[in-house]
Amino acid sequence: MRVSAIVLSLAAGAVLAQPLATGPAVRYDGYKVVRVTIDTEEQLQSVLALGADQWTHEVRPGVPTDFMVAPDKLDALDATGLPYEIVNEDVQRAVDAENLRLRDGGVGRAWFDDFKNLTQINDYLDTLAAANPGLATVVDLGDSLQGRSIRGLRIANDAVGNSSCEPSILFNACQHAREWISPMVAMYAAEHLLAEYSTNPDIQSLIDHAEILIVPISNPDGYDYTWTNNRYWRKNRRANGGGSFGVDINRNWGYGWGNNNGSSGDPNSDVYRGTAPFSEPEIQRLRDWTLSRPNFAGDVDLHSYGQYVLWAWGYTSQPTSEAATFSSVGNQMKQAIKAVHNRTYTAGQCYTTLYPVSGGSIDWFWGDPGVINYTIELRGNDFVLPASEIIPNCEEVFPALVYYAEWSLDHYGPVSDFNHDGAVNTLDVLAFLNAWTIKDSSADINGDGTVNTLDVTAFLNAWTSGC
Ligand SMILES: [Zn+2]
Image (cartoon, rainbow, N blue to C red; front, side, top):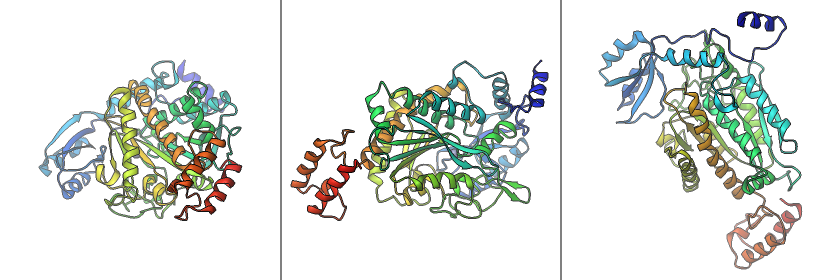
């Protein structure tokens, strides 16, 4: 019955909403996950030289790093003399179990009970937009390399405030195709921002006074490929020549691009940075939307796995000029996560906390538009995650995203809302005049370093327009 139903739907030209029954064609039978303690760069290179796929990112003395290795490479790993333990004897088992489960429709009945493919995610974006007129619209940012739409849900109430100057905040996920938990967390944020609009005054104020764009799948070609061909594919599907495919689009952003410490010039590498900054259309779409906004205010980029809250810089160990702000907001996000299910995420600068990343979005959003922004590494010990982890992971990260968005609105929001109460009214004029009288730096509206009558003019102009 199942086979004939598939044949019939193909004959009718329908697109299959579920993965093919055979599962991803590339198999990892007998592949192991080994936990290796690495102390030096040379030792890391000796493991990578075996073709090992580095799964956990952190590499530092005394902290074990997980790699996936082919079964015929174990002897060579033994020969390195590095101590290791096997933590997964057969990677394919979990992939097969996941595929069998999803082929039969997944566990549970609710949308967040199991992982969703590209078609299902796009359909749910449409559903959320249709159910929330006036608050949500689907935005098509443009096509991927292979012509798939990169879509987001824009959440804003344009009937309140002056939308021409409201802060714009981006939440994007799944730059790395195999990190399936990340679009689920992004979709949960979309659903819950909308669901709580009428009951949670803080979320209502956020949606009234900011614009939030949620892009669950930044890399649709790669994501689709993980469902059909190779569950552990990470990059996009660029043909690099010589039989090599894929650019790591989170090594292709145009700030700090090209550094061999944190990316690779080898097209076969999983962290291949591409031939030039912004050579890849997927991140051109995210960049162009960002630069098109009159008041772009922030980004959170969702990845897996390892439970981290990370900030710039990724390409250098030097701290940014705003290191204290990054740390303060990032640690608040960490606390917001912990308060839900008591999970501890590690917060810190990307380069020194996790590892060097060159050409990552984390550096571009600070280096170019100049906004405080974060990368969150979600739950897991594998990119294949039990479905039972989805909802708890979504639940714990959502308050951190809300906290971040509220902070960004407060920090980058309209000058006219001087007292930050979410409304523009005469109380803001009084608050401004009080600050101006005592020459408080917050009254330096035109940013020229002094508080004088020019700032009164600048404030009243902003107040009149609601900007
Ligand atoms: Zn990632």
